[in-house]
Length: 189
Image (cartoon, rainbow, N blue to C red):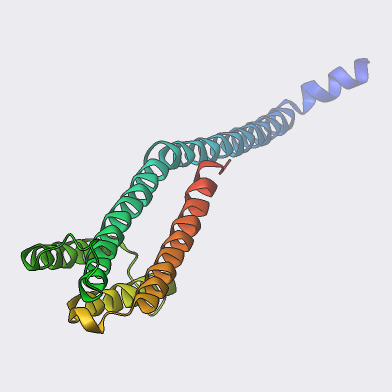
């Protein structure tokens, strides 16, 4: 034991340097560990904040958009139905014809407005992200608009039914696809 104390006394400077180096290494390891723990904590807080933003802001906004597309589509398709079946019944001279020519002109103006509004609501199709359902909906709306502009005797009930049915189906598919995305945003953990 005396020899150990004598060694320390004779080499006090070297022992001091070694203890200083050991202290510095320990401090560096502690600081590195603290840095890693803090950066992991910050990363987790970022993820939680992003999830909160998505859950509280983006998902409700997407849901509101889905509801608006559904509502405006229903209104527009109801107007198409009214005008086209009004023309069919006028052509068939049935008692069901409740539309006057002035009503048809007013409905055509309304249809143009609602069709433009709905087109602006639909996702934009780009080269990088082709929105096939938006294109299909626009195509069906264009066909229905052309049918609505036809003279009464040129409107064919079977074609009207087919276009309305196909347009409704594509709108339903778009809404379902968008709902799946919205639902997945709410479920991100």
